[in-house]
Image (cartoon, rainbow, N blue to C red; front, side, top):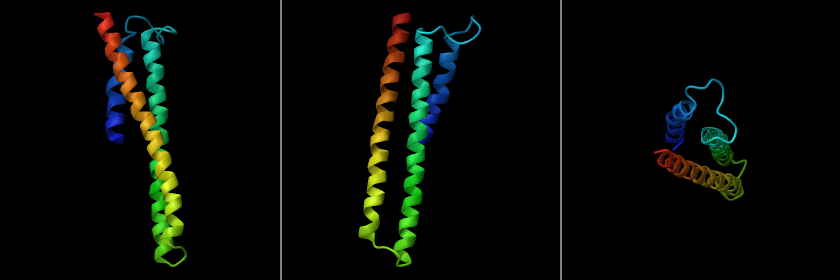
Length: 115
């Protein structure tokens, strides 16, 4: 999933750059290209948060597994920590997916309106 998102961002970034070809500098404030570029930056931020939470969960699972194996903890003591992180990850991922879907819809609508 992470690779798909990064690929989508990589593939759409030139589109937003192309929207302003012919005029130097950033797209004018409020223009469709500027709005879409800001949405892509928000998606990048959300993707980074999802990635960080996924890494935290991986570390937590590894630490919990070691603690249980070494007798320092029990599965029932460790599961709530992992569940809380997994829930946060799920919520953030849902927000990310919604933002990607909304951006795709707006880009398509904007492109169709330009035709």
